[in-house]
Length: 448
Image (cartoon, rainbow, N blue to C red; front, side, top):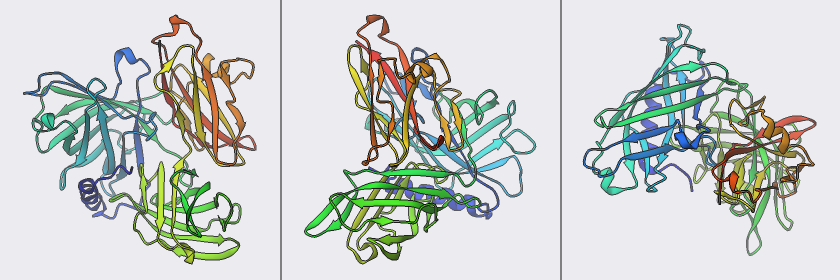
């Protein structure tokens, strides 16, 4: 299910329109900051809303959905002001949190016409170690618990301040602050800068269960994938490359010549829609198809999309299609993990690459690659998990199967002393020894 609701679409549209009033896009690159977790669960996440709400009987502890999670989590995207160097304009954000004890979900939506700014303390406006950072966002709080929603103000201002911390790839900032009108609540946030080469490629793999091609008498599932190459100037624009999407069981496949850009799409951060053209060959016949904009959407920030859906009623004159594609990702079959049992980790990736899944005791600072950080520390557990003779991590280094889904297995020994332990698993795909894509990390909590 896509994350944007109708009210959010219009609110974010207003946010972007305000930021674009000065014509900021095209002058400098946007930067996205992702929420990161604390590796010590006993201390609680460092991305939290905690405290009390007047009139609510119990204290609350909302944990922000972090970058480690399957949906790639909380983020904020900013672009520089063309005149005031330290000032950045927020053009898109997703701050959604959950209280694990109650299951309540709290999300902050942009307040139409409200303030949405990020200030760098450094005179150059760069994200530099040791300098202060502030974030001010006027938001509309929306909670899944109607009783709690009734106690929240219609709008509130999220005020965060922190300092850029060295020692991490891409740097991070520890921020804390308050919500106006909610004096009993405090907010803490650990944000990691997500800054890559301007023309970074993102690899996507089709979800066979929800991707379809037209076929006689109905539709058939699709397998394969494509690469989106980010424009070096405008991070909303992507070229398509290495497209290979084929109907399972035979039929005309959508392909492009290897290494050649073909087609271009535009990701609108206001409403998270996709426009543009797809081109290549369908069953060997060249075509160019203009997207109709109906059902063509993406998730995640514009500069680092995590899922794209293209849905056309008549694709290249060949009938309806639906391409539902994930950024290279990793999912566990069981959460939490249990002693004496094996957990399956399913990693998506492009056919023709090798998949590697590893583990670490801590997600930070991560292993740096040109296509992103594998959020696993280079510690003894990581080295152990990659040792093919370890006996606990199996099938975790293998060629990606034709369906683009590799299964790795982790056996947790039946040792009660392991109960309560936490570790992290993550992965990457490689071709000719170089990383082509990285996954998010998955937190593993061992229980009896």
